Length: 60
Image 1 (cartoon, rainbow, N blue to C red):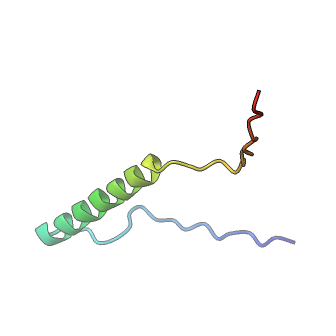
Image 2: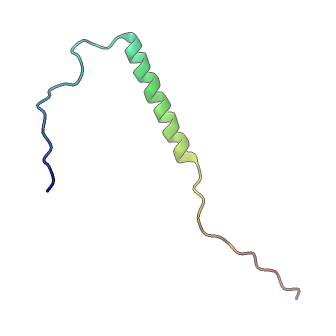
Image 3: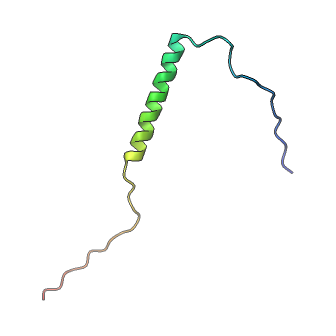
């Protein structure tokens, strides 16, 4: 039998104070690097698993 998850009554996560400029900069840098890594992953070509055989040409 699967156990039920306990639902938490949470209105917010973290403190109520605003982020410092250092924290904002760290978050901004993190999201920029994450965005660049996903762009690089999309740009890579996927190689098909199909092998092509080379047929010798007949000398007609």
